[in-house]
Amino acid sequence: MDRAQAIVATCADPKPEELIDGGAALVAGSGHFVDPHTVAVGDRVLHGTSIVVATGAKLPELPVEGIELADGHVELLEARELPSRLVVIGGGVIGMEFAFMMARVGVEVSVVELLDHVLGRVDHDVRAEVAGMAERLGITLHLSTRLERLSRQGGAIAVEAAAPDGPLRLEADRVLLAAGMVPAVDDLALEAAGVAYDRHGIPTDPTLRTNVGHIYAIGDVRAGAYQLSPVATKQGTMVAGNALRGEQAAFDDRVVPYLVGLTPPVAGVGLTEEQARDQGLGLEVHRQDYRDVCPVGNVVGEPEGFVKILGEAGSGRILGAHAVGAGSPELIQGMAFAMTGGLSVAQAAGTLSVFPGLTQALQHALMPKPIHDPRYVPPQSGR
Image (tube, rainbow, N blue to C red; front, side, top):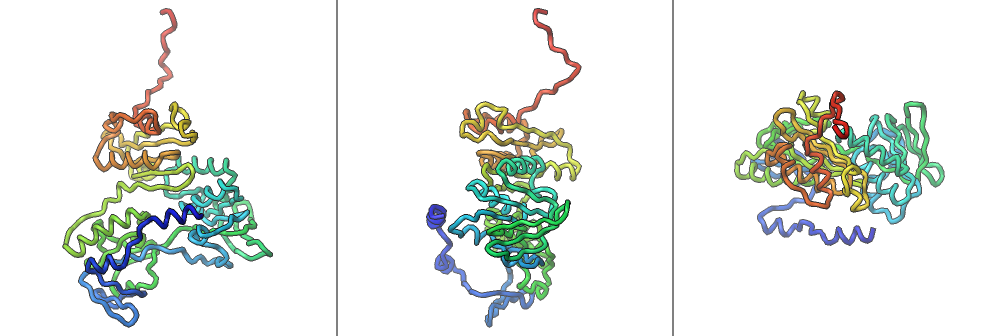
């Protein structure tokens, strides 16, 4: 924790005086719409020809008895002592990141997930690999299980849930609430501005405009948003030009690389196999396991993992890429560059890779695989 805090301290935070020097006026307080061009902050009233909503996301308010006994991920990150037993509510990105982190430092971890799988938005092969790694780490996954109640039982927290085979009861020293994040729209009075929204957030067009043309929404508050800081940063830059200079820059969400901070890490970009098939796209699926490429993985002592590339049948267009294992974020960043540059699978395969290195797995994944025809009989020796 000391090391983590020391690293964070070296990161430069935005300073209010820098914004003020740049010509911005800062008003502290909770703001809400009065009408489409007016925002009230306490007893101050602000008028704007353009307005940007960038309020982010927050933890959901689950209607579960005793939910106040659970911690958010920020509280758990600030802990100075490890719990002996941790129950994680939710098997999404944050939940699995903490489950892996805590399990690797000796904590007994159980995950309670409502769906029948973890990491709901990632590729199904990645989910299966992560579930296997979790099992090998000693993490207990309770899938298709609904949280019903938390209560204090002496020095422990009792977790009661409904599992497929009946009632489930767990005991923990700490409980992590990681059941996703929801857009922070409750206190904005969006109705007063006529801005459409629902529980998924505020819908926008590609230029980040809401249904009210001069009001924009960026970051985690957008409906269907990738809850990633690089996405919000990019959108912030774009919306400044659109709102202040009348530009029409559009955000392209087809190439958004993501990281799930497990050990080893998970990364991906573009469509998953399920998404591509749901769109009716013909697929060429390329997969390469680390263990089958010498000396990938063994070099860094992490032989677990694979790379998976999805190409469109016929055109060879790269639709998505997904990886589990050491170096996966860097491999996926390479595929993001290839997708942005419009390279086909064959063109990307024609690029030489560094040797030796984890990039070999990517190189092998891109290569066309030989077709094994059972009718083919190899020539016999001496003939």
